[in-house]
Image 1: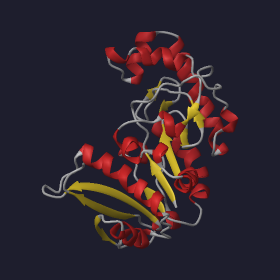
Image 2: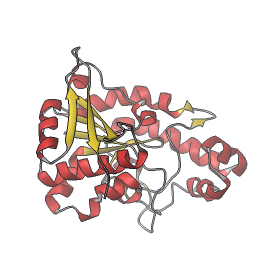
Image 3: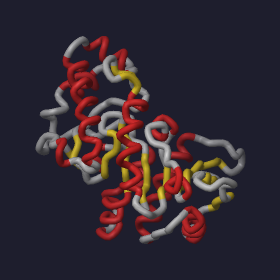
Image 4: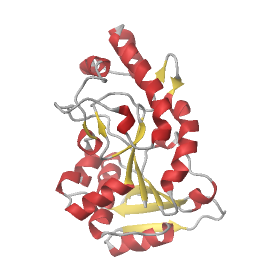
Length: 260
């Protein structure tokens, strides 16, 4: 099982670990595309601060993120699972998983990123600010920049098993499973049961809880139909309908009343 996650906008501090070693990151087929984004982002943020803030879409209160990006090559690095924070990652709570579940997380979780393309939660990265929606002056829209490298690398990373896609739309644009891979891909939408509407907090927190539940249970669904069964066994209310066409991803709705 490969689980595709969005990053978080907010991130924990880099800390005092050894700096980034780009060659150590997973998915080495993305190395050239990563280097291109890193080079331009560092150059942009080491120059005109106001221009960098405008390009990155940062408010006045986030001005300090520009300086943080300027020193990405020398900043301390930590496992990506410690860098990403926010509602989904709080609910997932990787640090409190038992040893077996942590090993499953290391194998199965893939976090998408405007800067790195995609990383494993064990990959050591510095804290940064660069969303997939950014348009860098030289490279252009990052969603487009990543599309070709992702198409070459991600099918192999997906292997022969289930792909559970929990990404937001901006990150989903960087890679869309096709063909046989799409047929064993399931995307999840979380709906507030009383209103049947997507509510941001419910959506993010429940996705984090779903991943945590699967990791702790050691669930290994081979495809979307088995995933539906596994989630129901874990107590989730799931509505699903098999796609009408071959090579089309499944769309699952998970219904929640409230998050505690």
